[in-house]
Length: 95
Image (cartoon, rainbow, N blue to C red):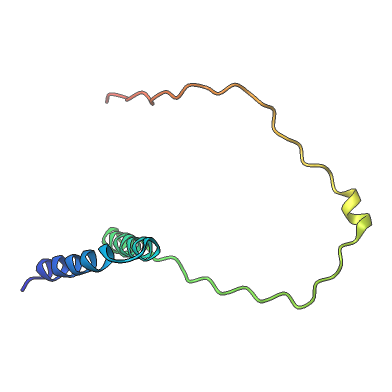
């Protein structure tokens, strides 16, 4: 058997299992297949894999917030409301 045949049989088995599953399982299966496909595509392009993140340490002790410091924080400014602009396609440059 070729690798393509093995992959096709595996995908057919996944399809058969996910058809009878809940929506959550179906979405998780789709996410797993998509992530695997993206990893394979990155490897084929020669991209460096992202380094694994270390889990952040849990905070040791939470101090109560200082009310004086909270009063001194500037209020966030809302951006000026402007009219939406129509979407235009970028022009193709002929070389």
